[in-house]
Image (cartoon, rainbow, N blue to C red):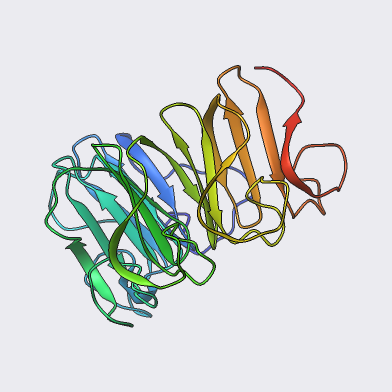
Length: 275
């Protein structure tokens, strides 16, 4: 997955061949990247066909970047997920590939129905952003609507139920931005007014709502000046428009929350600094 044409571990940075890379996304032992010419490249574990090379596990692992098809319209958004990959092309179309255990490919197919080549989700041309980390996916349209599909046992999809979806379903609201990030079974997203919203699994307080209650619909995290969000399995990190940095969650055993302690937090706490 390091793209070095080997399986050697490295403890210092090593360059991936090429000098015209523009976007990059790392999944679970695989990676996707685009070049300035709009081509898409993949390498690493190809289980379930997540590299989009029309090959399947186990013979399809790649230790060097390999071009995905011949299209030159991939410089929209890319997201390498756990066992899947997603992309929005420059023409506004939405694509997926890989494993499909919970309908997370959004292709209206039952499981497993793995797909090893890029396949378009629906027929829309107004998609602007896509993101996924595990078995659910989230995408934003140019009109500010937010859509989700896939695994939903913990209310991860934000549509007020726990039913899986194999096609995109709209999360209420029309002012969502591309600042959307999901953990394994929960998600957080920012609206255009600077408000931050969370939903899904909250067993360790990872939604930042000062409780450990699960929510199947978006609930606002206090504050109206949020500017970025990045979510992990049990922790979250966010910045505000005043350049302050905030964090919360239930995994702080090795100090990843930056608070000079090992305490868990179910509400945002500031990491020192204002720049």
